[in-house]
Length: 145
Image 1 (cartoon, helix red, strand yellow):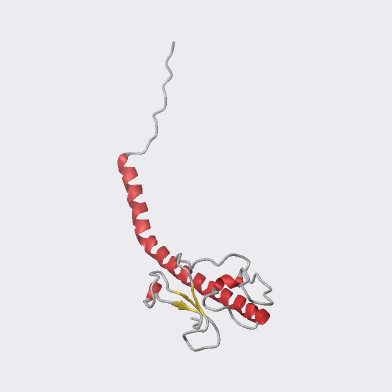
Image 2 (tube, rainbow, N blue to C red):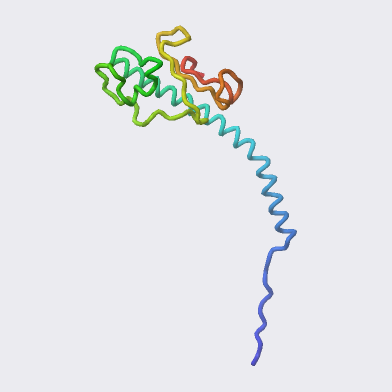
């Protein structure tokens, strides 16, 4: 019997593997902070869009009922008819009221503490607390920024 000579096996050395892992780590260290910053901006934009959607639905609610929901009735009134409200033609939103992009409930007030004739809706931002700056800043219905 004649033995066949097997071709040498190709493989990756430990040094080559370490070089690849180092390059991936450097790439992640440079790109990750930028991606997280974009994520924060996207959450702020999503909160503004949700608040605008709520304000549009509240306008339709007022057209039907003659007034905005009270603070006690809250945004729930856009999905289920509040007790004693006539001419409710909802639901005014296609889905249940979602939490803000950070998982906190939106704050709804009517009458507004800002003194306007429209209700106010607030997301307290990433920290879930009133005030703050940057991603912790409040996102409010009476400012369009």
